Length: 174
Ligand SMILES: [Zn+2]
Ligand SMILES: [Zn+2]
Image (cartoon, rainbow, N blue to C red; front, side, top):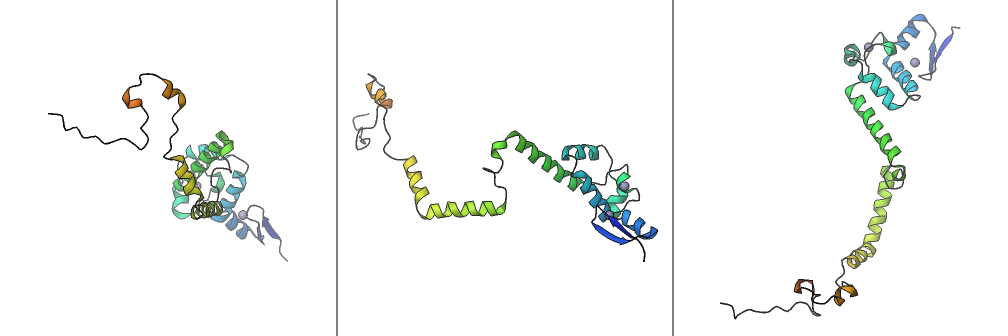
């Protein structure tokens, strides 16, 4: 019975032969798993900065394989992957700057968004939101008393007469 080689990164085992091991250790899957495993311990900004200083590994990006693997001096990260990482860094930065907005006011998942939307719709159909909006732009505008106590206000600052402005016709002009 042959020995079995267990790969921690990939969480899988195979018969331990030189050929199998070499094949596995050079495989794309293994490199991805290994990289992801290490990236868990570094923050995204460090990883990105490191990748940005390298040139793209043409061989890896074209064929998905590179004999140098993780020790390749060129970057195995695609432009798309870098963009995603950049986004992740941005998100993390924003969360650090505005910890209050984390979770409570930002929509984190589509489920949360949907349930909020449902509540909003329920409020709308029950007329609650509509009423609130009406109140906000209500017609009965309160005139502050101090304004009325100021003598000799220019006409433009006078409150409208009860019943609204009267439309007068100016026939005597001309
Ligand atoms: Zn592996
Ligand atoms: Zn490479």
